[in-house]
Image (cartoon, rainbow, N blue to C red):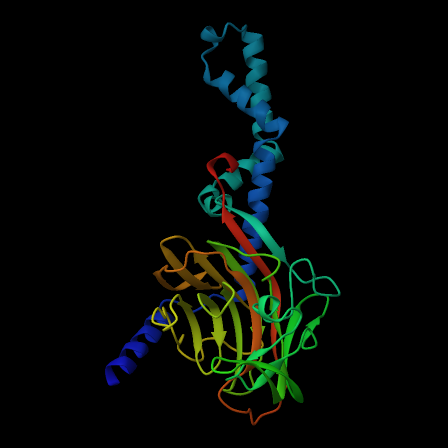
Length: 344
């Protein structure tokens, strides 16, 4: 036990000595600026002015005697080239070209799924507010696992603000259905309600870059918030981030949960009511979890099938003694796939 505590302390010390976690606003602003610069660079690279610049550059690089041009023609070409070289567009192109190493990461990916939740209601073409397997076992009925202390409502605990979507966990006596491994689906009473949002019927992804901007409000060690992926049942399962008694990034592929990849991100590294951008890089060989662009952990990949996206909150392990509601807020969700060579 002492060795484990010392190891965790060493990890935490190394983390903070290396600069800790980048600020979300600064990281997002930097990424947005990089994306805008890349798009501007592409436009300039394909512009008529750039094509003309390249033509003149090739002519200037050729000795006049080999070009067959008169001195007057040669002088005019050099003058045109010099004028074009000083133009705002060409100057900007070469200034942006200095960032070309940073553009490689952007060019390597294409966006295939995105929602910024700016509509007044949740987009029904992308999301459902029921438990994923309910569509197979009990169509149009939502339920909760028997060991959880809340009941999911079909959208009643999900609010769209026009800028974000929020999942609320609140104290509210209610009746509903829970799933027990021993008894199956049975009626139940609970003192709390919460919500779930997922793409089970609408969209699944196998490998790629999955990102979400979230913040959480946890008022008790019993309240959890999670951004996760699964295949239909509980397993296989990937937690992009699960916040409860611990902060967890993990993946499970077996029913014995023997492939847990990572647990406990050093307790208080994340603060309540603060946005973070979480990212999962998932390929055939490896899974890498990151926060605000900083890799936190990597592990061998053992999951090789399409998964739906989900975010949810709830109560597990006991009843909160502090005031509810507690909220998980999602600003945006994005999935990207690697570009093929022809698409670069």
